[in-house]
Structure formats: C-alpha cells, structure tokens
Length: 630
Image (tube, rainbow, N blue to C red; front, top):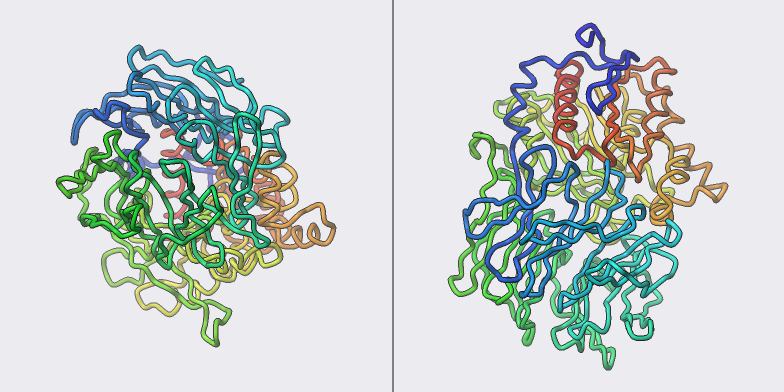
C-alpha cells in the first residue's frame, strides 16, 4: 500500500498514466489545500475572428487547454474544441468571407504536431498533415486561401518549408539543411519572409520567391546576428525587424528591399520582444523586455514617433493582434498577482479593457505575493566590481527566518519573468517558504554578452551563480540558510542536479523535472531535428576533447556527491530530454545509496500538461518539501 511506502523506496505503483516510485500516499490535507490553487485558470489569445466580432482564446476547463470564442468584453466563453490532447497553437483565417482556423496538436506530449483545419460554423475538424512528422510555424496568406508551415517529413531532421491549400495538398518551397520557419507573407502573397535559426545568437533572414524558389539573404554580415520578430511593411517594399546587430540588445530596424538601406527605427536599452503591424500599415505595436517586465509601445510608422499608450499594469504582455478594422489592439497580460487574461486597447477611447476574467478559485488577489526584483553579487568582476545576477524574490509574511526554495528556469536561454505562478503562491502563502527565482548567466533578456557567458566550457559558471545566491541567502536575517532546496525543469533540471553535486552540504533537497543527467547521452538521444541547435549551446559531443569535458560535468559522473534526497519527474514521450536521462539518474542515485523518488507520466512529454498529472506532481512536491525542507 502507498501509505506504507517511504520516500525513496523502489516500490513501483501505477496510478492511471503515472508510474510512481518511492512516494507515500498523499494526505487529504495536501490535496484539499492545493485544490484551489490547482484550479486557477488563465487565458491566452489566439486571434481576432475575421469579422472582428470577438476573439479566439485558449483556456482549460477540464484536463487540457482548448479553444473558446469570446464575443465581447466579459462575455461568455464558448468552447469550440474538445480534444483529449491540448491545443498547442491556433491561427484564424484572415478571409472575412470564411469562419475557420488552423490549429496544431500532438499526441502524448511527443511534439510531433499536426495541422488541423477547423470550420467554426460546422465544428468539422480535419487533419491536413501526414500524422507522423513535426509541423509548425503556421502562417496564413493574406488572402486566407493558403498557408505556409515547416515540416520534418523529408528526413526527420531538417525543417523544410511548404505551402498548402485548404485541401491539405502541399508543395515544398524550400528544402535545405537546418531549422527554417516562415515569419510573414508579402502583401501580394508572392514572397515569404523566412528565417534560418542556428542558435539564439545566430540567425539569418531571407526573402523567398514563391514563383521560382529564389532565396535572397537580407543584411548579410560576417558577425553572428540574432533576429527576433520580422514582418513586411504593408507596401511590400521593406521589412521591420528586431536584431542585435552591432548592439547588446534587440533593436527595432527597417530594411529597404529595393536598395538594401538599413536604419534603426527605435532602441530602448532592452530587447524588443513582440511586434505587430496594423493592417493599414500606419501603426507598429511592440513590447520591450525591461529587466523581465513588459512595456507596450505604439510607433507611428511614417515618423517613428511614439504614440500615447494608456497605463498598463506591471507584468508580462504578449500575443499582440490588431483587430481587422485597426480600431483595437488585443493582447495577453499576466501579472504577478493575477493569471494571464486577454485585454483590448481601444484607440478611439484610449482605454484598456479586460475581456476575459480567469478564475482564481476564490483566492483573493491581495492574498498573493508580488516579487521584489533584486540583483545579487556573484563570483566574477566587471570593471573591478562583482557581476550582479537578477532574481525575483517572493517573501512570505512574518519576520522569519524562512526556509527557502530556489527555482531555476530552463532553456538554458530562457528567462524567469514575473508572471503568475499558482505553485509559487502556494509555496509562499501556505507553506511559508521564501522563493527566489534567479536569472543566472546565459539567460535571455540581459544582452548578448550575458547570454553567452555559459556556453560550452563555461557551463558550470551558471552553477556557480547559484553558489553566490546561497551566499546572499546566508547574509539575510529573514532567511534560513540551513533550510534551502532547489527546483527546476529541463535545463533547470540539470541545474538542480549540478547544484546537488556542487552544494550538497548547503542544500536540504532537490526537485527536478525532465532534467539533463548526462550531456553526452542527452545530445546523442535528443530528437534529430534539434540536436545541432543544442550543440551550438552546449558543445559538440562528437569532438573527443569536448566529449570528455561534457562527461566530466555531467551529474551522473558526480552522483556520489549527492547525499540529500531528490524528487525526479519525467514524461515518457519527451522529445527534448529523453526519459532515459531521468531513468539513469534515478538508477545511479540508488546505486550510490541515495534517496530518490520518481514520477513517470506515460502520456506526457517535456513537462506535464494534463491537469491530473500536474496535480499529482504538485502534491508530491509539497509532501516532499514538507518532509525534507520544512
């Protein structure tokens, strides 16, 4: 029986689609205490209906996120998809004479996404792709009679570009080595703006002529340049883009396609994130990422001058979409104390109106903790002064000293940002833990120099940033340096395992999900379509010297240093970090005499997206932290 199992036991129990090892029965008080937090919802924006009479959103009402239509501000959500698997993305056909959209979804978290055409009038949904390969970056033509996408169908590795009609019959328009995606269609639907993505700091922009397949590179450079969002001007004579060429951050630029002249339209000292252009081409909406927080800007495309923007609450802004008549701008806004919802900016009225109201299961917003942005010193120097690492600090009530949970993001080129997290709110509000969410070196958002500080042989410098955070914790009276745990997923999972080997004596426990245990086997077994992308960041395991280094810094090599308990979770169908990574880590910890509990979800991939699986993982995490941290 589960109630007789100790943490770390190798006894295996099957619970639905979960295989559980070494986790005692979850007490009712934990299930009931977490229930409201686990029923907090959010809504993300898919797009305006072509008529402009409402928006399509994604939200969860049962096991998985599905699509809904909302006609007015505060209006009822009308569900339009009912799949067992979550809808990964959706894009609405721009043809006002139709009422349809394209969506993508996979099976079991495997990320081999298929494209489906959904008729919103009849509810009919047809799969248009082969059912086997990976597809994505779906872009409707301006007329809405065709769409472009990438597919790995040719060899399972390269991302070829195809154009298809509404019958699903497609033709390849670009077949080359590498990861390619369509960013935009030219206004006449005769050309595509495409990007080749090599790594987060090396990309290439091209114009692809659909008539003859001619490919012309925009702004060739001898230096590695990162390109973010890019789109055609409405006359088709130019391209707006974000780029870090000759700069630390992604700036907004424009290139003239006739003469090749490039000019900087705007720079903010931070990255330009999202871009959207009004249908009449007169207004460019964009967001900047300022130390993790989003700022909304509206630019006049003729003059480059900023237009006034109403006050937007502090948080994260994304999914910018102009209405078909250009009178409104829809966006998603998530705040530290409120889950993500859809808002609409009315240009004539000059106000921002909330359209969706996601439930917080009766938990009042004033109960939630807002983070403090801190910058702590780390081990290396800049101009004689310690480099400073940004982190978001969530404090519980009371003077302390509080136990501490450090949460590390994945990526590794990800960035922790101050959106809403029900898990963090539970840890802080109900468990009395302080939560620190650092952006160690290698994180995006702080300039390309910072981004490259952990590449290749610099891998463990990011781990040393967590050691510096432990030093910072030790200097705070309100924090208990004797009760610290660490958690993270994906690359953050590797960071958890590495921290447990480097700072075992300073940590009480570790919780990791879909983490990398062995750099060599990870690179050899991650899906072929992403292998070269990861080698650009981590190093090439085929090089003997690099292979030796990667093995040297792998957690499996240093497992004897881990004497503190671990909780590890994994999706069986993970295409990014294969389940074999977690399986070998569990095995070597047990062989070394350590304590490890394990959760394997047979219907998940890179993380847990189904509510029942995520609920159990959250419950097990709380029980684990109660036992070994509190």
